Length: 505
Image (tube, rainbow, N blue to C red; front, side, top):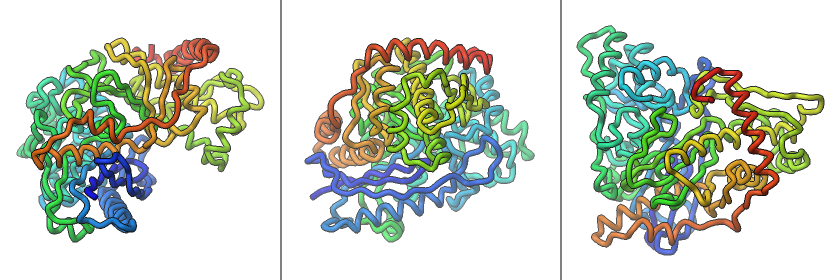
């Protein structure tokens, strides 16, 4: 059996799958959880790259411990990683400091400055704002930095010794010319002017010297490299095994959910919530709320990202020390609309609408509302209403959905599916493999390997084999559609009233 290995290096943990791409079956899976560094300033969210390295090693070794599996069966490896993370390495490729993550909102001031300097929106979560923050707040660490990578690029470097970015994940740095799918030289020059304004040394070598090569977006099947001898020893792999380009978790989730051709729209329910679809041409939101990302199989991947999703329901779970199954059962006893309780779920600030410094609010509280089931349903409704708000914006830009495919662990929750279907007024379909990013990474690896062997296979064919739905669609209930449409009007009015933000109106 020839297998491909898919790794997804995420915020809450690293997951791995072994895929038999000929049959479309996942033959083994493993995971290793971890958390954020604690005790940081408000808005900061960081992890150390060594955390990911250790997790990848443990996950691979667990996969290879599966009876009947050995490293020689793995023909190719693909890596998915959380987007926007800022990995800075010294001249020996050792991390200079922990990585600031996609959900770090401590760089809001820098993002605003870069938006003016670049002449286009740079969301707070994007990597460029983190780099400017580093130059401004930790000049000694910036001076030591010789290489800037994204999380999945860092794992690729460990596996192959090759430093590179591909256009999909690089789209989330704020440093890519999306139309040309190349680094934006004018933006990089503007960054250097801002960085040197706050940098002690005017002889700084500049950002361009710290960026790796950009892989050719016209040939996305080309591998980034092959497993090195050192990586073979560390991770228990076979030296010379192909490593595909990989990509950001959203790009790999697009592959793993079949959103690599027009018409398929995917909703990913994780720590953040994302909605994305394949496009043959770039789709640029003039306000910058919909990210005009490139895809990792060619084309583009317009994407909506909200920063608050399962983190909100986790707060209820932790606060009441109850599991999600029990909370869901309790929430079913609460009528839709939560008897007037409305949760503005911006616990970590928000990207869409653009409110990086926002906090969460419970509006319309009455006696009896501080119960587990009521708060859990309010969390499901608030996050769904906010996500649906962004989906409307996608539709105005030309991305329409006849059905929405759900991925991520929360896609298993039947009550959440019902609420989403009503808020979107669209059927929602859960996929059989909720870990679509790890699956997509494995599929990309198989796709790259087949091209390398001179026997290319179309991604559409791989999707037919490997991407499967789980049961029948959840259809929108007409009565709940009307109710949530009314609540959505109130939700948006409350956001505008509390934050007086043009993007919230």
